[in-house]
Image (tube, rainbow, N blue to C red):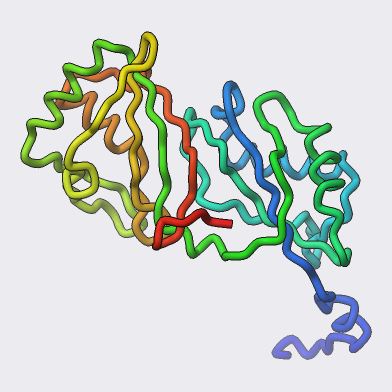
Length: 233
């Protein structure tokens, strides 16, 4: 090394990563929990995993912490039935149902652990997400305005700046269904790091051009899908 210091062999060995199994924790995020930011959600999961006592793996170095990877996190205010976080463990085999019960007992209100699985796909394989939107009945007029438009151009913020997108290419028409005293609409949007579209983009456009108040609309993610639109697992 340029400093002239050599790293002892025993120190290198103690930092070797053991054989690890990746475990996927699936959970819902509804109600008040939908307003937990990703950073705060990481803290919630760290605390909950510690309280549950499940034997997960910690990263090494001077600031060890629980290894966690969230799949396609949502913006504030949106609910989901299909959130997931990956952790690692040295345990083999992993008692998946025991983990689910232990975790679910210590989760805060609005977060429920639905299952614990061994992942089949990496999060980078996610290509689409399905959302259920609930709106007041008078929102139909705004939806009709959108459906009559030939284009719906927005500026989407990216890591490199802003990108112009025509929402009509992804959502040419919004079909609604009246259920009891509300309208419901299902959206299928591209998802993933490379081409992620979120309902908030459509809602912002609707507010600016069609007179729809986004606060009147609830967003629930119901599925994460692969390129062939089968379930991400």
